Length: 109
Ligand SMILES: [Zn+2]
Ligand SMILES: [Zn+2]
Image 1 (cartoon, protein in one colour):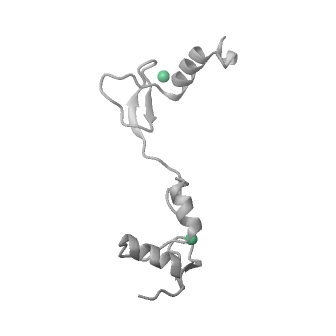
Image 2 (cartoon, protein in one colour; image 1 turned 180 degrees about the vertical axis):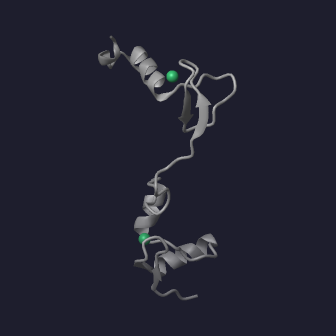
Image 3 (cartoon, helix red, strand yellow; image 1 turned 30 degrees about the vertical axis):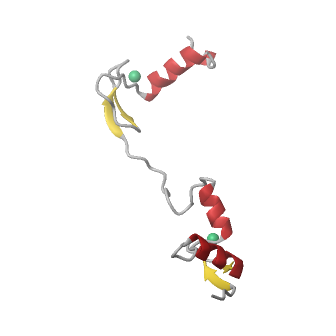
């Protein structure tokens, strides 16, 4: 079976890329049924775990209502509060953080 260089269009960036005869032979050898859908750059980017810009846009995460275990204020946290585990509002969280790391002496009155 003869392979010929083929030009495919990357589904991620929309650019054309070459699916070379050599790669086709490699794919056939491995028994892959599908042609590659992404160019080399995009495949490398995905392997490297770089999040694609198209996903996760907007940047707003779901927030959960909770009551601060320290000061009793209503607050919102970016994770689901677990029963029995303390939840802190932003202020208390930062106060506690500075207390343990001692990096923010400004919080000490
Ligand atoms: Zn691409
Ligand atoms: Zn608090």
